[in-house]
Image (cartoon, rainbow, N blue to C red; front, side, top):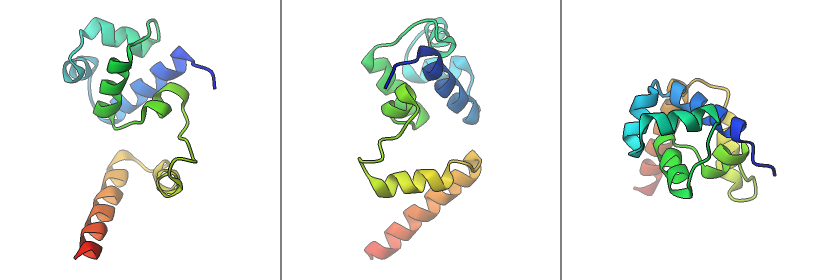
Length: 110
């Protein structure tokens, strides 16, 4: 795997836009200056592990996906399968599917 700063920037920017957040919104959520976060999204600077993890948590993306654009299929095959099933749907549909899964899991635990 090769680290591609522009690819990282593209994945972060794409997800932020899917969540209808501005650069300023994101910067505030992760506690960083807007110009610094903007540089990350343009791929003109790197980031610390701490910043990567903050962005990952805020966007709901794995650090592995942000850095390399892939999900490790060997970590949890069921989670990967669910991801592949939902990846081509819009964010609203993905959220509904997740809510249905949560509901189902609560029901079977009763």
